[in-house]
Image (cartoon, rainbow, N blue to C red):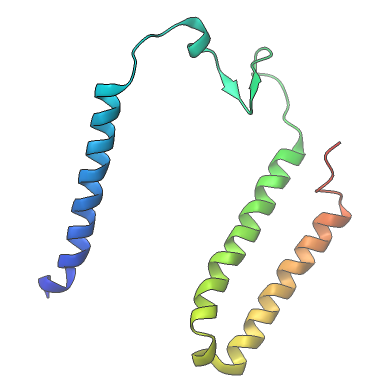
Length: 119
């Protein structure tokens, strides 16, 4: 029974070693010169323009993030289906078509609500 888990444990051990080596190399090789410019917040290629607290973020940012997650999840579910499409048969095809139809309706809704327009 334990022999079945040996490849998984070896994979985790290799991942831990790689992470340790990369973090150690970063700690040893990175420059340590701090200055006020490096300590300033930096976002989206734009320098900070004032305090963030109290300012409202437009809903379009959240809507874009949610749309990205929805369509990312779609791809995650379509890959296993594509691998097992022949084994699932016509029932699997119908289920995937319903899934894609629901996501397409979500896309049409977002398009009609002008979620993709950047004003």
